[in-house]
Amino acid sequence: MHKIFDYIKGDKVIWITVLFMALASILLVYSSVITLAYRYHDGNTFYYILKHSLFIISGFALIFFIHKINHRYFSRIGQLVFWASLPLLVLTLIIGTNINEASRWLTIPVINQSFQTSDLAKLGLILFLARLLTVNSGEVKIINKAFLPAIVATAAVCVLILPANFSTAAVVFISSLMLMFMAGVPLKHLSLIIPAGVLGLLLIFTTAKVAPEVFPRAETWTKRVERYISNEKADPNADYQVEQAKIAIATGGITGKGPGNSTQRNFLPHSSSDFIYAIVLEEYGLIGGLIILMFYMILLYRAIRIAQKTTHTFGAYVVLGLSFSLVFQGLINMAVNVNLLPVTGQPLPLVSMGGTSLWFTCISLGIILSVSRTIEETEEEEQAVEPQNQKVSHVAT
Image (tube, rainbow, N blue to C red):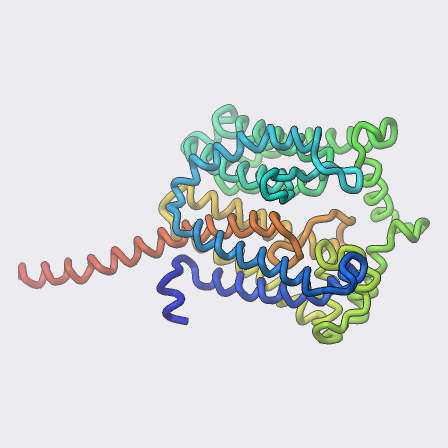
């Protein structure tokens, strides 16, 4: 283990936590893809587990490669990613792959691999805001210096994501506001967004009722929210996912049924992605669910420690923005699975079966570890210089 850590740098706790979450992901995906395997591959679960494992291995390769890059380079890279993501989001709305009345994916021509452009836009926006807030760090309280450009950039991304993916737009919006708050933007400025947000939500609900063809997914959003608020069960088919998740959680109890013993995986749609946390609670019980939650809290805590230690403002903002976005998405997924929030369709980062979404998560982790590596190397240099200074001082005396 010591030799392995000679090759990797950065926060070792994050490395170990991510490794355990990846191993847990492989076990959970293997257990939950049985229905998909019988539906599409004659019961061959090896196809899915091999594909998922390859994505995880390549994801770790991305983390390793990116954590070796000086995090200052991401200040410029983030600008390119942000500006490139805007036309890609427009293209996605026009010619993207349409699934469940939503165009969320673009396909890379050469390798024929689809990806959600919203993942790229989310990463680019956080890097863009981190640079913007760093450059204007002394003027964040002036509304037209940092706050107004940041809100315009955030609004542009969210508006382009919103028609196909309301929940992702909400995650991006809240993560961006949180980053601005942590960067010192006054609450009185941020509070100006609340009326605009409420007005926007009312406009979406009104549009869904009057002209649902404007936002193809708007009717689905409004029905989910209305059913959740009223707690009505008038349409059993509409509440099917939630009911099956509740059964999985109730039968799991404290200790769970044991690995691979889930029964609700046969009935629960998206059991390997959006509702994988319900499978965690069924097979590993409340204890397993708390362990997964603990992993995310450890990631957030270690990220905050990194942000506190770094002397580079940009690095601190990037770490805070990326870690909050990742953990916030995980908490939303868990809240949906236990019926604390309406169904959203957000996967559980590092745990749910996925492809390019897993890669973007790993890229974010690589950037966080890049900042941590810089801190570690600076501390090592200081420790190497200190004995020399003491030796010089001793000779002088």
